[in-house]
Amino acid sequence: LSTAERYSSGTGMNEQKALPDWDALSFRLTETEVVYRAVGESDQKPVWDDGEYGPWGSFPASPAAGVLSYGLGVFEGLKAERTPDGRILLFRPDANAARFARSARIMTMEPFPEKRFVEVCLEIVRRNERFIPPVGKGQLYVRPVEFASEPMLGLRRARSFTVVVYASPVGAYFKGADSGVRLQVLDEARVAPGGTGHAKAASNYPAGIAKREAWQAKGFDDVLFLDARGEGFVTETSGSNVFALFPGDRLVTPPLDDQILPGITRECVIRLAREEFGWTVEEKPLAIADVQAEAVEMFCSGTAWTVRSVGEIEHRGKSTSFSQTAGCQRLCQRLREIQTGTGKDPYGWITEV
Ligand SMILES: Cc1ncc(COP(=O)(O)O)c(C=O)c1O
Image (cartoon, rainbow, N blue to C red; front, top):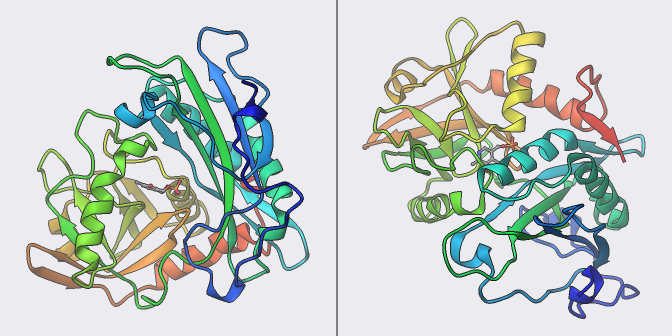
């Protein structure tokens, strides 16, 4: 089957989909019009077919597809948005392209060509342009996914893969919570030590979903996982990196290891804090005890979260509040300036669509 034939009927290309209510956007899926799909075969040269843009719709999968039994799937998330002067900017697609390929390799899957990744993301934004929210209302979130589509029974690396890239308009990840999010700190780990926790792999998210939901029911916004080796070090929330600010403008974030996703927003925060604000930034193990005893401020970073203040953390019944948000606000403002094209971008982080 060609890529086109693999699409099921879906919505016809001529039929225009309804736009969402821009004022009610949250971080939820709104189906858009055009999806990209490519197929890769490890034992062919070139590995990847040209791929194709088609209508949003379902496509058939083998009941034995590797992703379904063995979780052989990786994904990315990046945002495009409108600028006040009428441009459309995509934030750091090259960095997401590199991480997409790296995640695939960690998961024994074929890496998707990075240059093609960037081109496809730009094209998906263009072809779904109607769905980019007006200035100030949100962003178009682009979600590239790769999974093993080969039917397989035993445990081994797969040889056939599918890449899909789609987009959805999104609003803020947290509504309300302006004074900062409340995090429950968990001794249970998000991912296993020595495993694939440093990949953006589908299989790394179930623990986050389960724990976050359980604690949301008790009034928390999210959970903060301690390290899987039981050493009391902070790792990540269900979907963001974390930072703690100590007196003397000393910013600490956990170092990249087998339990930390190399967040692209994390890297931006580190550069801005170091190069523009002159803060001391340390990537080193961050003990929860030190955070509770000495940190003046805490915040999280991620594509969905942006940079978000933490108002309160609770660990084993001990609660700590952070009333200061100035450092986070300053970082967030500078990052948003770059993302919205309203401030200078000396780093080459934005790509005009
Ligand atoms: C587990 C996890 N950590 C950190 C991040 C932050 O990464 P980024 O800043 O690249 O979005 C994400 C979100 O992508 C994530 O899912």
